[in-house]
Image (tube, rainbow, N blue to C red):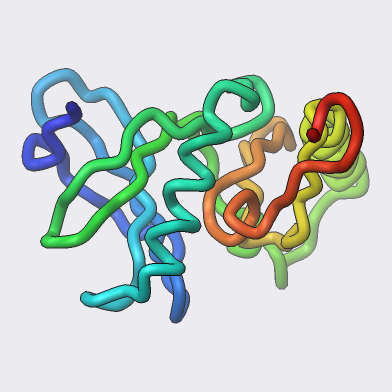
Length: 161
């Protein structure tokens, strides 16, 4: 079990459903992402969504997704802990001029991440800038937490059955 009390947290994304934090270990400097319901007493459906995302951990790769590593309790709530590839949510970069070369690298990287997801028989259902982490220097993308996998479904067929 991950002891989250040894981490300091920075809010990356806040919305009315889920909040995303970056945690940095005070001892080792290691980073994680923590996703938690925005309300103190979430509906059972919200907890099932976190569990569903956690259940996909074996099908996700660190090269293109923030992989779930644990479900635990912190701040008196159930939270989902994920690997932190770094970067910032894409929606934080919007509204400012982006170079064409950077935009193209971003598009290619995001497309590859989505292709990997589809190869595993998972349909995203909630692709939006808030659900993508981006390295602002390179344009590299990772699919992040939120409604992304929580609303995803397995495609019918051999892989998604």
